[in-house]
Length: 208
Image (cartoon, rainbow, N blue to C red; front, side):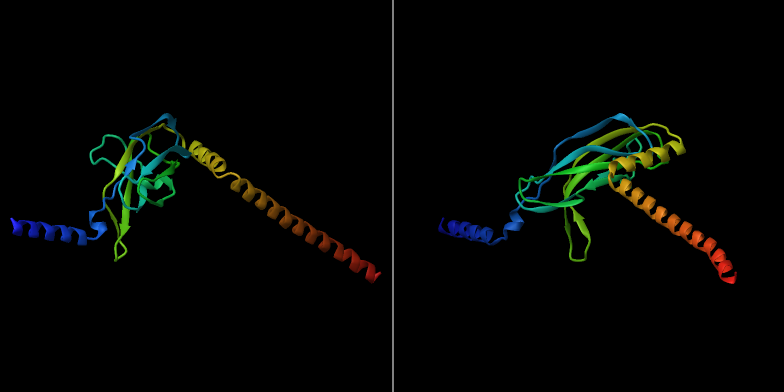
C-alpha cells in the first residue's frame, strides 16, 4: 500500500511539472449559424453583409482570422475568396473575448448568375518557425446568396456607383482634385496662347 501512494505522489509531481500550455485549451465559436441574403444581388456591386462575431471559447489567448471555405460536393456555385473583404482580417483574442468582423462582398462585373453558398469560417492560427501558418479547429457560419443576370454595361455602372457610395468621401475628393488640376492646366495653356498672340504685335510696334 505504501508503494502505491509513493507512485501516486510521483505521478502528481509529474503532472505539476508539465507546462500550463500543454493542458490549455484553444477554442473558437461564431455568433451566428447562417447568413441568408434575401436581396437578389447584381454583378458589379459591393454589398455589405451582416457582421460575423468570433469568440475565443478556450482558456488561452490566441490569434484569429476569418476566411472562406466550401463543401466539397455542394450543388450551389462557389463564390471566389477574393470577392470577400474582412475587417479586421486578423485579430488577437483573450479567453472569453469576442471580435465583430465586418464583411463586404465585392461582386465582379462578370459574375455568373445563380445560387451561391460558402462557409464564413473563423479559426485560431499560429505561425511556425519556418513562417508557415498552421490552422487548427474552426467554427463557421453558412452563407447563402443569389446573383441575378446583368448586362456588362449595367455591371460597370453599378460597380462605379457602389464604389462611389461605399468609399465616400474619397472618390468625390479625388474627382474634385482632378477637376482642379485640369482647370489649372487649361488656364496655363490658355495663358500661354495669349502670350504668343501678343508677341507678334509687340514686335510690329518696335519695327514701326
